[in-house]
Amino acid sequence: MNRIQIKKALLIAAALAATSSAAAAGKLEIFSWWSGDEAPALDALVKLYKQKNPGVTVDNATVSGGAGTNAKAVLKTRMLGGTPPDSFQVHAGQELIGTWVVANRMEDLSSLFKSEGWTKVFPQDVIALLSSKGGIWSVPVNVHRSNVMWYNPAKLKAWGVTPPKTWNEFLTTCAKLKAKGVAAPLVVGENWTQQHLWENVMIGTLGSQGWKDLWAGKLKFTDPKVVAGFTTFGKVMDCANKDASGLSWQQASDRIADGTSAFNVMGDWAAGYFTTTKKLAPNTGFGWTTAPGTSGTFVMLADSFGLPKGAKDRAEAINWLKLAGSKQGQDAFNPLKGSIAARTDSDLSKYNTYSKSAAADWKKNKIVGSMVHGAVAPESFTSAFGAIIDQFGASKNAQGAAAAAQQLADRSGIGK
Ligand code: GAL
View 1 (cartoon, helix red, strand yellow):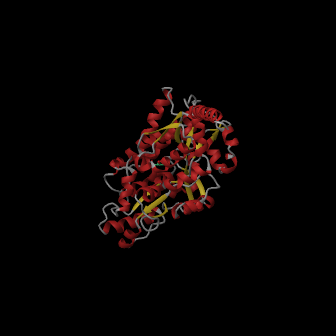
View 2 (view 1 turned 60 degrees about the vertical axis):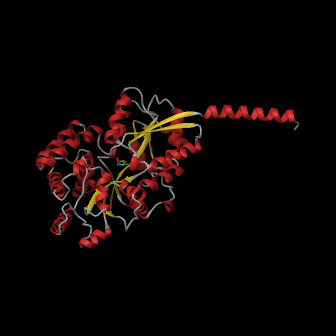
């Protein structure tokens, strides 16, 4: 090549580079409640996205607040106002299907599931949870387990107690700990964490089939078994701290780590918090077992991302969904998050002892869905149930709470 040819070649190369970076330049807005302590797993996924899509500016919009209590309200305003984010976090199941799918605001992702081979790598039960009206409506990034009871192994040893296996045993252990001067053997936080506890007491009381029957409308909330579950829940709450309403789930977890309380029933994002944020080791820094009465049952929920109709940056959003559903994406996100991959081909060597135990149970346990985290009940039920829990906290009237819950179930069309 002579000098002129070289110059020409360089000019062409520069022009090509300019066009391709112009083509790649773009934006993506994702929306979630994973901020602060909850952010590391999402940050890892965003980092991967940026590596794969270097020209795209990512706006990682978050509205903090455990379980999405605040984020869901903001999302509603944006969806109804016609300014949806390009993709948003939502629980797999009724939380999306009963809201934005029935309102015809979501794109059907069936063809993406086919082209990415996801119909084969996600478990059929998970796909069923994401599906309705012939469509598949979001991409699951994980599977979280919600029926876990966390404790501090060294403190339990010092107190001379072992994790209780049933709720009755729990109450005996609670009395023992109180006698030893532990003011709050159980720690709970703000309202949604109490609902989380309630569902674990209920599943531990009714069994997995009873829980399924409740959401199928085959078992009434006014049934004596459910009323008994409320009564037990009331007694369990008597073991808890009095400042619950002001505590986030992270602050409640802190009280396990620092040994103020003996037990906390929380989803396994707590494992992510203990290991990723607090740098504690499974089995020594924190211990876990299934919530009383729920051994052999895996109460599941899945975080997923959907594609709203009218997303401004649709192509970038599709690339985001592809990454969220990929093996590489899931195995970058989940080891930090405390959850396991929704995919069946994930590389378990990347996960800690806690997550390995969850993955083993996921394969062999009976699977039921969480109400408070959007899997089994319509959003109209879930969003109003918090008031029943608050009222019950004040009155401890199990019959009254059960009757109110049944009225809400009827209004929400449960079993219809
Ligand atoms: C759940 C969500 C988890 C975690 C948790 C606490 O609803 O599925 O990923 O974020 O809330 O905020």
